[in-house]
Image 1 (cartoon, one colour):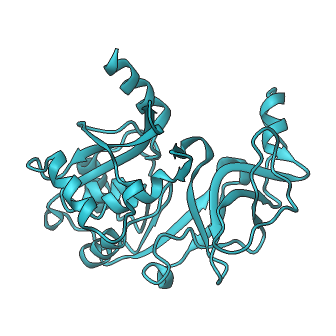
Image 2: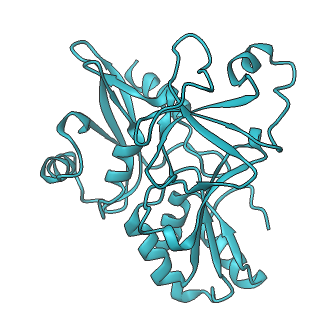
Length: 287
């Protein structure tokens, strides 16, 4: 069953009526489902939950398993690769929280040193835990973008697809996606990865959805801004500031300097956050 628009009640009703066994959604969509009274629906047909587009916070993994009685699998991939590249299986959901899993046996994934003005060299491979660009190849890789010569020059280089994603491997060969190259915030000359801050803020019980991005700052070049959809209507900017300051998980230089509260974040049909839309809307709001 394919929905062209995500509506929590429609999804839950369809799972019940069609006896859905496997369901794919972005982590935010799973979170939205859990805000409903699940006892009103018969969801016992559900066996496997698949998520992608972002990592799932350990607290959300735990709640999904406890309330839906399902096994979880994360997939990492993109249409250009056919689309799945890596899996994080059920047994690794807690021990490798935040990881995109291990590459499929048919695909090869490398972390390479990015180049500013040219595609990264496939042989310039980085060691474990060092963040670089994720490049990939495999039998289902696309031949190229139709009639988009410039895009092909950037993304298809020496037989590898250059994803534009930043990430690293740990010592066990598990892939971690840090962020998009275009989404990285550079503040005071330091690289800041918004996804890390988003994952941290998702652990706050009063937050339903969050996007972190950079905005121009005269002193630092850019500053970190968090755009929040509330789960608890009573939370304030001061509450979130305190939450960040008191935590040992978030370095001070990564802490958001400004919070904005919105009713919803722009996402596509598959639940992927559209930061380019968010940036434009924020620019328009300041004019």
